Length: 215
Image (tube, rainbow, N blue to C red):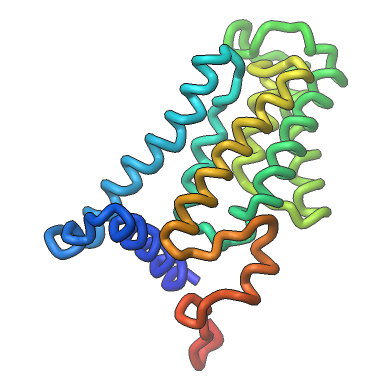
């Protein structure tokens, strides 16, 4: 699996460089340097686009767990947790579970825990939010690890208004659109919805073949 992911990462980098007519950089610098600089620029641009929208609209399109999502989308693009289905539903479940924790413990109008500190009510809200998030993601096969951070962001009081949920999901959708564009530009069959369907159509050179030990 790690070898397959490594090939995908290099295909993403080399595909984008070829599209920009910058393939000479691949022969001038080592693959690790090229990939590191690519991630520096791509990750920065990805988050900057969402952050600029937040700046213009003064709405919370940008939030901490989006950074982890961006890394997964470009580092392991064909993994199921990186699929649009898992990313969208994962963050939705996390945000909803965070709101459940807030309302169960009467914290919907309380200041953020980062301003007032953590008390027993906040401990309960965070625990409930994280528990529900993990349970539902596994139960519905919609695992997306950064969604656990989204649950904590909401339950700790950084986003307490249910109306902010639509804005939060808008930020996720914008990031997914960029991931789709960049991966498809590089020739990687990033899925429209679920990686399970895409894996059946993968090019042969991207399909992992187990060795004699079954790995």
